[in-house]
Image (cartoon, rainbow, N blue to C red):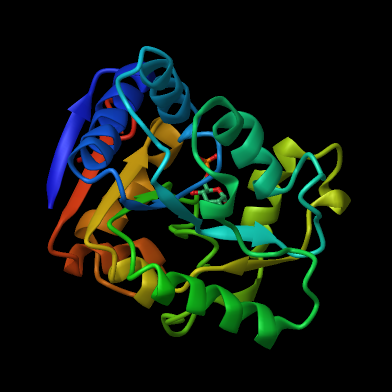
Length: 241
Ligand code: GLP
């Protein structure tokens, strides 16, 4: 594991964006695993800036997102498709046919999970997976559990996740209770993993994830077993390390 220290959020975003852009420059046909949440926003902004300057070309890049809320359409402002499109994809030259996000409107869980697993397989796996860290140690929407779930599945969101994510909705009741998420095996099979964390509120869980026991109760702790894990975090998030 390599831990890269950044003074602040902006520096963290730039350093992490550097790793993503190096991946795309070295392999323009890269398959990127992408994440949502507030932490990656600075990375997407930085990448857009570099794209506009002509430094990066996304025309052959393929992406697979970690997760999507069940019941939300692409047009719903809280959906992760909407987030990805409006915070990143619409500003770069990625081909939308190369963008993959679970379909939150698909009610047939088995069908959607199978479809998404097949997409990941048909892309030949993920070259670089970007990950944020949930307050309870979740990655994607892999919540603390009795066992690690391997592949795409539909998960009942933990109460603390619903609470934490309610800041994006107008009320707690509006937050979907379920989500589709890529599984731990698909994440761990990525060739390289880039974990980002910002803010003091993530410091304790980041410590547990990186140095605590490996347990499905802290899903991110499995990352300790990955042989190419880069962590980019800011000073407050690293304050207990
Ligand atoms: C959501 C996403 C995760 C993300 C997490 C942390 O639950 N499903 O992929 O890592 O939020 O988000 P934030 O970066 O806003 O703290």
